[in-house]
Figure 1 (cartoon, one colour):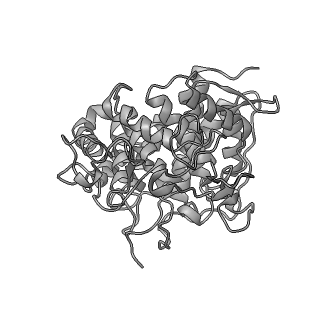
Figure 2 (cartoon, helix red, strand yellow):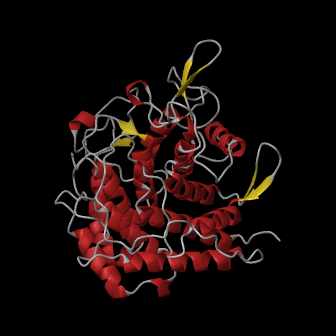
Length: 405
């Protein structure tokens, strides 16, 4: 087995192998739905987060991290981010210091975090984590951020780490990020990199964002603004426009014989969020098209579109990458700034309340969450961190904009 080729989450599509069972407490066999306080979803959400963080705290390894020997440092980074964004009583300084010490051991002289095939993903998550405690970790954050900026596909020579990533603006890779050593850019790595830039405080006018807009537009099924020949018109997003295009959700053929790559949930929310971070307004036709896809496909029961990821459409495939989907959805909708979604049938959905209730119902009695094996979400550390971060986004938005009675 090649340890370099494994999947951390649905962000790392196509690199799948089996990772040994970890030393974390074994989660319960089935979730037990939490008792919901219908009049106070914020209180319910906070209780669920505290319980989830307790599970993660008890899962910290003797070396201070949360990853197994064969796993990347992004595991430790994403858990630390969950603690830093959560209630203070759920962590303690010694635990956090030990975790950061473990994470910093992976920083390379060029600023990357574990500069291997997953360098973009590891480094991006680490930047977001350092930024959550910027006063203490400003140095490592800036070093990692410079590395991340240097590996964006661009036509600029200055600051480019890898000249193979120097491409003209007509190249579908332009403006995106891919795996550290992979031959193409993709929307998953790109959205993680843009999360990092956003969390580090870079303005939307930054050249990295402006270059990224071109990649984002080419990843969207919106033929009005996408110059790729496969582009459809549902407004959703695929995995990558590079090398002729690709979608985990497969393809479909229109009545006139045109092959279109299917849009799916996690990448559409990734695209919506990335456009907002890059400074596009709600009136931009690309943003409006993505928002319409959200309205047409609103659900928390599955990662919509993913049901087509297998040879035969099925409900099992629809659950792949579900916790990654929740996290991306929560960040995107908070960035969009619309607490209530009116779906295409005219039904209103307060996404914060519905997300809190959904994730709470999936929590196991010991505080963990466990998803499907595909994309490594059967690992409770990873699924738990994604679930908690999604809840924390919803809770923060509820604090800013209380739910309507």
